[in-house]
Amino acid sequence: MKLLVTGGCGFIGANFIRRVLARHPDWSIINLDKLTYAGNRLNLLDLEASEPRYVFVQGDINDRSLVMDVLAGHGIDAVVNFAAESHVDRSIDDPSPFVATNVQGAQNLLECARQSKVGRFVHISTDEVYGALGPTGKFTETTPLAPNSPYSASKAGADLMCRAYFETYGFPVLVTRCSNNYGPYQFPEKLIPLMYLNAKADKPLPVYGDGLNVRDWIYVDDHCQGVELVLLKGREGRAYNFGGNAEEANINVVRTMLAILGKPESLITHVTDRPGHDRRYAMDFSLAAEELGFAPTVDFATGLRRTVQWYEANGAWLDKVQSGEYRTFMDRWYEERTR
Ligand code: NAD
Ligand code: DAU
Image (tube, helix red, strand yellow):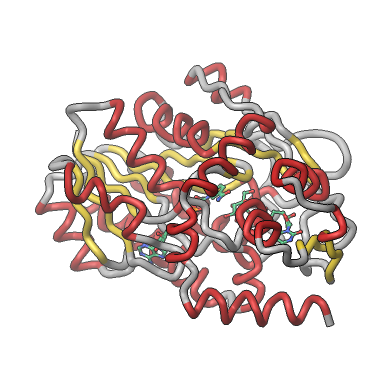
């Protein structure tokens, strides 16, 4: 199979490419990535040097002629769309790039793939399209979409466009909706790698609000397992939930990180809450379990230790990915929250 993976230089895309190349010797992958501040060619540089089944193309999913050329030139059988602006805080700061990539870019990719008669299109959506839960219950695939942030609204827009391409054109689209990922290569703007970085530097760990917001954590390779199963066995036109069965309040995640690193809890600093902060996410993934045989394999305690070990062994990666643009945004964002 010849796959076009978009956004493969980001966190989940890079893990997905490594997983499927290792597991499918007859598959080859074209990775189309714009290399935004969050995309790092470094993540897969070893494959560029050593793996003939892997080709990197720098470009934007909004670039119609480039996408058409890639689809035709490489005889692509299936597309997996990871490319997105992915950070909720940045979407609050400026929603525009989120609409440009997550909505318009996804539609452009769908249209190019439809015109090119691509046989399967897997779109990576998120649990955030469902909005927020109260203290009980879980999201199922029939929970109404009710996004609360510009990020999740843009993801819901693409998610619905996928539905429309299936219903209107019979185009073979499948959607995945997963909860919070963590693991190797996660960019240090997200909770877990940011808390690792700050704790290592003995800097304050900024916890939004009371720290009791709950996320359902999934180790990144388990999400990649879900995407692979959807690609291989999912039913066209369907959306599939994925989660880790690991609900944790943010404050507990941060305390566990400090305990692993042997750092004091006095580093925790409660800062002004994220506007529109969803209180709780939890995923019912029984559809994926029953239809696809999906099951998360890494529990949160093991996964978090493994993730910390990866960051400990990859300090040079962490240094290199922190561009000037990254530092400028982070300094301004957190300075505004501690005033
Ligand atoms: P990321 O920010 O680490 O990576 C995104 C990648 O997309 C980067 O390599 C970036 O350069 C690329 N990109 C951005 N705009 C592009 C464009 N216009 N054209 C081509 N490439 C572009 O994100 P991630 O955490 O790996 O998330 C990947 C996908 O999974 C996203 O669609 C996200 O919404 C979804 N998702 C993420 C999580 C999570 O916990 N991280 C959970 C569920 C779903
Ligand atoms: O649920 C899936 C989503 O998970 C994905 O769709 C998004 O792409 C991904 O970024 C992630 O979104 P979150 O907003 O949940 O992730 P983040 O790591 O930004 O925050 C996790 C929780 O930690 C959230 O409740 C906000 C809180 N937080 C985050 C940061 C960065 C803090 O308390 N302090 C922080 O500094």
